[in-house]
Image (cartoon, rainbow over all chains, first blue to last red):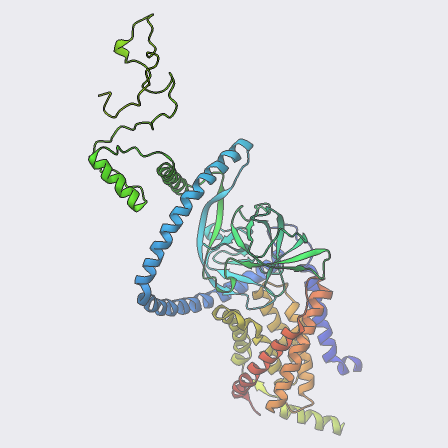
Length: 388
Length: 175
């Protein structure tokens, strides 16, 4: 009894530590369901805590975002004209790039169809706002304002317009936790864009992202794009993850290298995200229209660049158009109501009997007669208007 | 017997008491701020407000049992919200609460310099405890301690602790 009285403080501490150690041991068992990292009881505790905290987070986020929005609206108005001009220029550049890429994309899809490859595209998404974070350097978790009532489930991919953010971890009725890709327990299958090397990307304790399962390869250089490979069944293929920042030997796992990746998304400043709730084998209708339009634009550009001119240089109106084209170096479309001139082939350098104009007119032909052009007569190139 | 009575009376005089709202709201507020502040500026995640509050209550109350219970409760709440296995911070902060209370009953903890030294030292102790729990107990081999970063964290916690303790001193019920 004296022993208990004398050491009651230490015994209490030991009792608390033992209880917590047992609780930890129960939690870190391998989960039966991969989609549910926590057991039912732990998940229930987290849900209660989240339910208690979420209203405060929502209020704080609303106040913060409202103030920030008012301030940024004022600041933005001062530069909106220049920004609009820059965006228009950027849009023009993007349209040209999209037109160039469209043909490759169509060709890629044809090849995939021939190979029976099933591509998955982002089919449906749910937009959500980030209302909280873990507040710890050991874990990188975000809280968003959508949950199971909005159709979210664990392991759904979370992205922004710039690239991958992470995946859903615990999903509650009105909120959900996003495990960011830089969390030490996070992982994703990735593909190095130019070398086509597949690898596994993991978060580190310091909140960075790195690929650690590759041996030294001189082809991998800083600046190479890193995309999702689709092999992990979480992230659809082709999403932007980031770029290779540095390559160095991994001291803990020789002979592998530690390839540090700079994420495309600034994970510390994520405000709005998209949760991918569904994928589909084909492009969405909107994306399909964009692709078709871009392909048509690209085909028109190619025609303008490669085909010979169809405007008659002897036609006064056409001459002016050609002259303008030559002067400006850009294709000038004819007027809508103008009568299009007939195209004519270039002059023949070495004419033969198959050359255009070497055959007598059809009205002069006689069945069974000698219909070839008289020998020694040089075929004349057709003259514009001769057939009329 | 006389010595024991004298010692207990001295402790009773030096023990600080807090009202129930302060006892509940300050730790909860610290955990909430810890969750919300890094949303404003990500670098603030280096701070550990729950640790600062745990240490304050421990050295103020000077009761190892209460210090252990307070530390465990604050740590568990932090674990629930951070997505970590529940108990990691609970264990670390329970030890901090116990040690802080034990030390608080032996030295003068009203002095600002002493408080700063305690905050700095116990912040490093907590880093070591978290390392042991993550690496040895949970078997996370990838868990490393960046000592320079931990020194920076201890410094940041100390800088935070000094004014926070001065503010929290106003919540004490002196007898």
